[in-house]
Every structure is written in structure tokens, then in C-alpha cells.
Amino acid sequence: MSYIIYFFILIISLIHAQPPSLTSKSLCAQYYPNNDQSVQCECDDIDINRLSLKCLGHSYVPHFLPHIHYDRIDLESCAQDLQIGDKTFADLNINTLALRHCNLLGLSEESFAKINHLEKFSIENSTIVSLSTSTGNFQEIFQSDSFRTLKSLILKNVHYHQTHKHDKKLNLEKLLTQLPQLNRLELTNIYLDNYRYENLTDIGRNLTYLKLINTHQTSLVPIEHLPSLERLILIHLPQIFHTQPLIASIKFLKKLKYIFFAQNQLKNIDDLQSKTIDQIDLSSNLIESIDEYTFEHVPKLRTLTLTKNPLRSIDKNAFCGIDNLTLLYINNEHSSQISPLDNCILLSHAQLDIKQDSQTKLQCNCPLMHVFRLKRKHSRDINNLFNPNHACVVTNTTLEQAKNPHQLQNLLNLPIYIYELENFLNCSYTDDSCDRHCQDRRVKSTTISPIKVHKTSIDVQSKNTSVSPSLYSFFSYTLCLLLFAIRYL
Image (cartoon, rainbow, N blue to C red; front, side):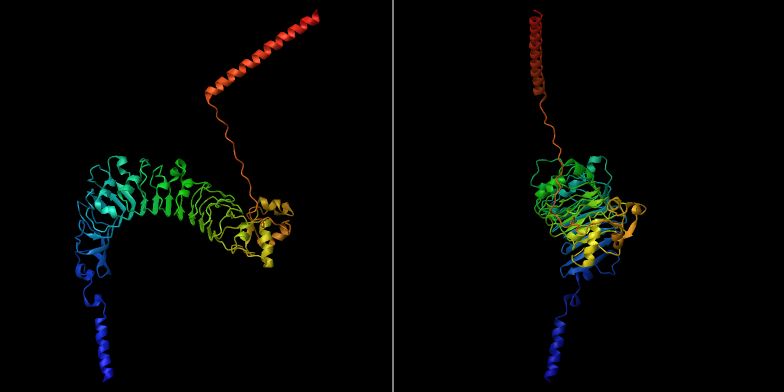
């Protein structure tokens, strides 16, 4: 009997333990059922009080309900031009609002007014066909009160049909003033105005993530005005690196962890200093060499990406001063497919994970043969990039170190197996060129600029010096005449 009572109690407890979604209708089932063709929105329940909507192919803004909390609303692939009039989303509770692949009509300062809890906003791959702002500038839509709490803004591939070219431009300083709580900003393929408001100092205090791709400006707000930055991404903006000391200014950003400076025609980053950066991506630039101690002022660097650069050499002491470098990407576009790495790095950074093209080969030289001998003796840890059964490329350096240069002349720029190096090279068994890692440092020659003298002082100087020789010549001539006369008498 007790078992039967226990069984009934168990059944009752399981019934009461059923989730609310099984005992009552969810928000999606109640307000956006799948069988309602008039809605045309995909609904997803986030929890019992929140839902997300993805609305495709609309020619109008659907009707949304003010008593529902929308975690996210996406309007995508609009069937026709989408009219967004004044207060279209007023009194709605929306956390994220995104517009994609739409032609937008009638945007104004009031289009996105009175939205509650708006934190993320994006417009992507869309065209602004017409504006109703007071100045005719797209930027004025961010004057709305809804954006005062915005934390994330994405504008990507936004096109304009406007009369004046200047109206197409956003001003970054003004935008950061309009959005005081913003911590993430991504702008791609739009027009940004050059830095103009030099008196602005209290802007972007909360900005931690800044991504600018092909935004066409030639100058940027001094990044030291953005003290909270943790990630800085600047792509295809070569002019701003030439018009201002951007790399040198990085040392003022005490929270910066990551920089991505691709397609900026950079040839070096000699002025880079940071005690916090741990990831650097310099892909698709014009860097040909990494000199010694290049990263000594970036001591926390862990990941370095140098892909798609015309790299020819990476000095054996290039990474001196870095203790935590763990990952290096060096796939390059040099046609010879010779690795730019100094072979001594195979010993000094045995644990470094080096990623390079599988067709790229090390240079045949004495340091590589030294590594081979140590590998054979199992006396040192050696980087996994090294494989004695792989081939290396014969270069002019190889010929200089060869036992018989004429023998290798026909193999110039061709591969030979690493284990065959001892047959070709004349290398000392006591070669210590790799053992003096970070001990020798070359002193770079510096050019002393000539001292500039003010033009006035030069004129005065020349005038004074011109009098003295004249007097000297006069007295010398007179003395000579007197001596000649005395001798004649």
C-alpha cells in the first residue's frame, strides 16, 4: 500500500514540476504563432518574459507590442523601400535593433525616439534613399534620446543618396559626444570626416572597442583621448598613419590589448610601446624586415601576425625582451618562398608556434647546420618547424659558406635536403652565433641634423669676417713696400 501512495505522490510532483512552456503558452506561441502568415517574422523565446524577432521581406515596419520585452529585432531584406517615420518604435522595449539589406526612407531625428532600453543598434548593407533631418545629415538621427544609453553601434556598407558630398560624412568626435555610453563602435565603408574639434577632451571615455575599415578620412581623433580602449582595429587607412604619430601615441593607452593595422602601407612599427598589448596583427602591409629588439617595448606580446607582407628577414634578436610570445604567423608573398626567419630562432624560441606556408623553406646556412647537429645529439630543444628531412634553399649566403662554391653554383635558389648540408658547407663545430642570443646589440647609426642659424645672424657674421681680412691685407702690403724700400737704399 505504501508503494502505491509513494507512486501517486511521485506522479503529482512530476506534473507540478513541468516547465511553464508546457503548462502555458510561450510569448512566441501567443503573439507570433507560426501559422499566422500576416506576421512574417521568425520568433524565438529567450525566456518567459523576452523574445527575439527576425522579420524578412517586409515593405513596412511590422506592428510591435509595447508590453513585450524584445531582446532583439532584425529587419532584413526589405521587399520595397522601408519608410521609417517619426517615433516608429516609440514606447517599445528593445535591447537590440538591426536593419540589413534595406532601402530606408524618411529617416529623421525622431525616427528612433522613445525606445526603452536600447543598447545595440546597427545598419548594414543598406541605402539611405531619403532623409528628413533638419540639416540633411545622416548623423542627426543619433540626436534621439534613445541613443543616450547605446553601448554598441555598427554601421557597415551604408550608402547615401544626398546632394552634397559633405553631408555623407560622419564626424567621429561628434558621434562620441552624441553616444556617451558607447563602448563598441564599428564603422565599415562609410565616410568619416577628418579630425576637426580639437577642443574636445571628454569624449569616448567608455569606448573599449574601435573598428574603422575604409572610412576614407586622412586624420583621426588623437587616440590618447580614448583611454578605455582595449581593441583598436584600423584597416585600409594609410593616410592617418602618415599625418599623425598614431603608433607612437599607443603608449598612452593603458588598457589596450589588441591592435589590427592591416592594409595601411606600413613599413615598420619602430615607435611602438605598450605594457599591455598581447596581440598584434600587421597583415597586408609593406614590411620587409623585422629588426633586432623591435618588440622590446611590448613585453606582454603573445601573438604576432605578419602574413601577406614582403618579408625578407626576421633578425635572430627580433623578439628579445618578450617572454610570452607563443604564436607567430609569417605566411608571406615573397615569390622565392624562402622563410624570412633567422635559423637561430629555431633554438632561441623552441616553444614558439610558427605558422608559415607549407611550401616555404628555411635558408641553407651554417646556423641551420648547427641546429641539425644539435637535433642529432638531442642536446637542445628545437622548434617543431625544424625537420631534418625537409629541404632548405641555397642562397648567396650558402655559397659564401660552402666548401666548394662552384659545386653549389648550379643549385642557387634550389632546394637541397637539410641532412646533406654537411657535405656542402664548411662550418665550425664550435659555431656559437646562435648561442649569443640577446647579448649582442648593433648600434644604429644616426644622422645629426645641421644646426640652423637665423638668417640675420648669418648676415652680421659675414659682414664682420669680411672686415678683418681686408685690414690684414692692407697692413701686409704696406710692410712689404717698406722692407723693399729699405733694401733698395
